[in-house]
Length: 461
Image 1 (cartoon, rainbow, N blue to C red):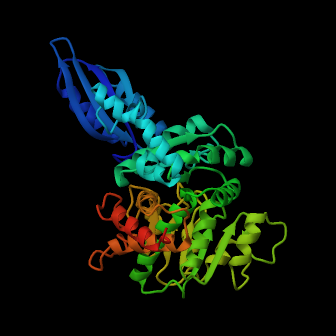
Image 2: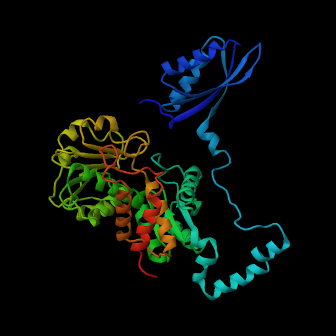
Image 3: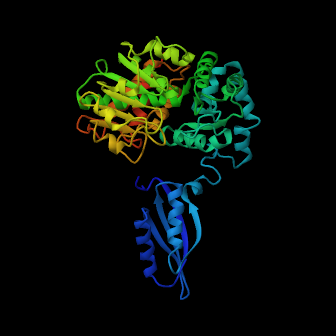
């Protein structure tokens, strides 16, 4: 694949001979090696040498190391130091705490802390619901993980999950002005996780479960929803499902089909696949089949796990069996949340006219989106370097903004469907195109419209 500015980016500090022509030679060499040069700065120039900072992007880590080697091999060039720009922005973490009130005088302290704070504590003790109004609880979310399913990288543990949870917290703040806190638990035991979240829940207005492996995540979410009086939202499930439904709504507008009439195949019966399937059915889809390593899930199959058995009971109304190829023959929509290389172009050719392909496995999709686009009418992926990125940032900030504003106690399917509709309707008829079925995460109206939809759908308190 080609390098992009958003992929692996490094800055090399070079010591070179005092010939400024060397700078052009470096740029040419990097380009021939597949690197994308984004900046060249001469940091120091003397009669003895030049100090040059070259920033370039690579395809992956292996490629970035190869780029360093080719530059270091040039006559008159020494690679003095290499900095990975991704690691640089993570130094010291990505979030911090700021006081919202001045703390400059004794008077300030007496109001914000003792003795004044005691009056507020007493008021909350008399009326606990006031905690949402008089503390950070009303604008705070716990981003909770056990590190068992970090991105597409697997079971990395709580410490390795922390950079992702920090990033999530930063996105909450950037897109919905919500104060979110990364909570990385040193346990992968369901009972311990549930109890830990229950114990910290008084300090938060909502719980965002993140990167917890299936099927553990299903039980954790169900139990927390039952025991807590604040909304519990598993973004890997429901955030993904919302954005998929929004994108599919607009993709169907492109090809002139309706959700109730199309045949859909979902590849992957994990957390995301299960939630996507459930929301599609709640939104009006009728013929949805789920494929996993056992084949097309069917209610007549034996030996399925409890989660897959329950999924099979609600899907595949025509009892289709067999491989992914069998399921896709004549199908209108493929939604992949499985793994790289699962979908082949010849499978797309077996689909119905106006085929829709969502290859969402992360970081490597089920098929290269560029290849899929040669055979399908509408293609979406989870990648930022292709059109139609299915990105959860479109959903979760606005969802929680609406939940917190409404002081909601629970999340309902109606809320999720309304959120999907809000995202879909940001794309106007004039903008709608096979390469533009979903708005940018930076569109200023997305979070606002999602929040408004959630507030409207929330039960009256």
